[in-house]
Image (cartoon, rainbow, N blue to C red):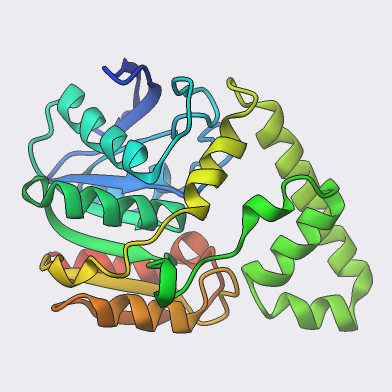
Length: 271
């Protein structure tokens, strides 16, 4: 059955997380990017991934319908949430896919709980620190919506820079669409300061000096036109782990769901 099952889970930390499960087969945890709201973007639920795995995912504390406790949030809090969701839903071990911010959280989760995960895929993420930080979204949060949208689009796919230079009318339409998405995303936050607090934790991400202990079978996946987590970040991330392999795909920061190739490749590799 591919019926989507949604539930609200309360963790001992005080976090209240909206979780989702769909599909049948081996367990796989999918950790999305930092602007997740599954009311707005649902590509994972209609992908071939759910035909090969029972996929578990959730909206992070502070985003969409999920909430977190008071105080400063750290990356370790987000990785603890991953294991907390697995415990609450009865998942002892699972494969793990992390995308963008989710790839950062995945690093923390596997390093802290190596026995809870089988195979790992890190898509358009960064190791942090000396191995490369990702785009500083936290520095743009107080800019105008249009300015944020322009900067995100110029980096999410470097090919957009040519569009901005050669077809400004089309680029303006892209900016308007991005602004509309961001407005809906921010309006949907159940915790008003949640996105800001998540981005502050994201800015502190740094696993560069610890990834040499991660010996799981790992695919590092990146988009060739990604300017948010660019190819050099992917190369450095893969080089830090003893048995990691690197695979690049056409596309930008959103390459994972832009076409069937990336997920199809991963299912074949993990088949």
